[in-house]
Amino acid sequence: MLDWIISALDYLLGVPIFGWGSTVGFVWKGLLMLVALLLITAYILLADRKIWAAVQMRRGPNVVGAFGLLQSFADLLKFAFKEPLVPAGADKVVFLLAPLVAVSLSLVAWVVVPVDAGWALADINIGILYIFAISSLGVYGIIMGGWASNSKYPLLGALRSAAQMVSYEVSIGFVIVTVLLCVGSLNLTDIVTAQQEMGLAYMLGVPWMSFLNWFWLPLFPMFVIFFISALAETNRPPF
Image 1 (cartoon, helix red, strand yellow):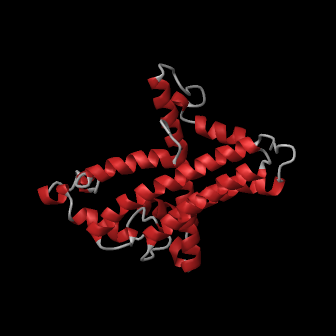
Image 2 (cartoon, one colour; image 1 turned 30 degrees about the horizontal axis):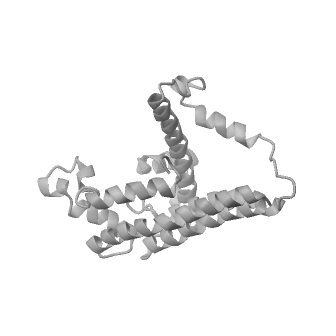
Image 3 (tube, helix red, strand yellow; image 1 turned 90 degrees about the horizontal axis):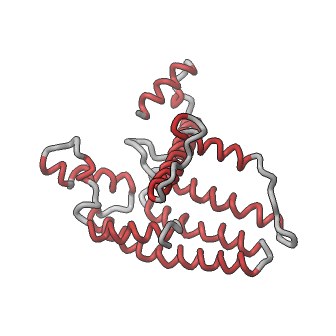
């Protein structure tokens, strides 16, 4: 899929996009990854709303676009043109910077994630430690928003959310350590490659069932712990 996108861009621009130098190639990779992340996020949010609507026996978003497929983009336009409201007495600069810090850190973490062979913006040998460091910094965006509001209730909510995020990072860390012990490397590309060489689909000779190669199957108890911790980390129900 990524090769097809690159070929299409080469054809439209008339020049190989990765022939312009490493800096331009890095920028193109970053832009493509950013667009892909935004599109995936839009439809994951739509799927989340559809599932919750089905659980509660509602229709869910179904007006904007066919079957509501453009609802997330309509919400984006709505939020973009909303008037920014800052509470009276709040530190305006810090209050407006808080969501920017949170979003920026969540996007920066994807720099080391290999989305395809050779498609990691920064293929570093300590990629998993980098993700741990960036994810722990995400707490600062929440604390900044609660503190800058100059009200005790948002501050208490921010402290609760930050404490929950920090506490469940410990369990997620222990789960990921088990994966690192199986692979013997902190490089995310090595972790992805290892799942192709030691999984159930590889041993059975059925490469088309690649999901059986993932570590969730041999490390299923760890997967359950990771799933519960991820729900708590992202403040999803029932947390």
